[in-house]
Length: 59
Image (cartoon, rainbow, N blue to C red; front, side, top):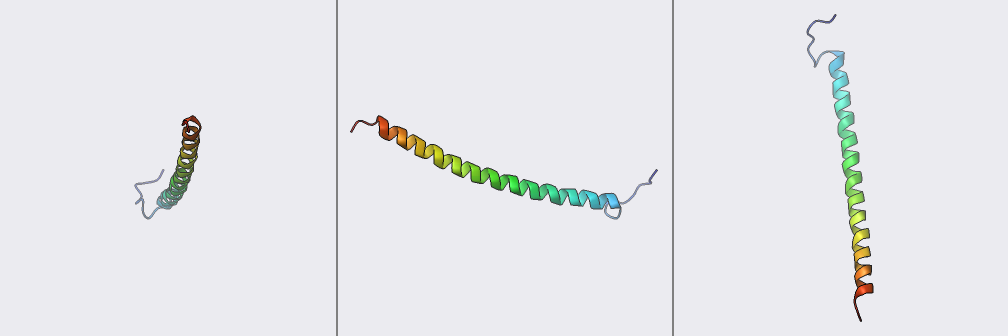
């Protein structure tokens, strides 16, 4: 059984740092993907609403 190791000098601390960096990278990718999908979805819905409005407006 291990004694009380310093988290920064033990190998477990290195694993924690690697997981933190990996989590940060994944979060950046997810946020970027959501922003891209959100922008594209807004554009699609705006065009659909414009087309519907043009079809229902009496000319």
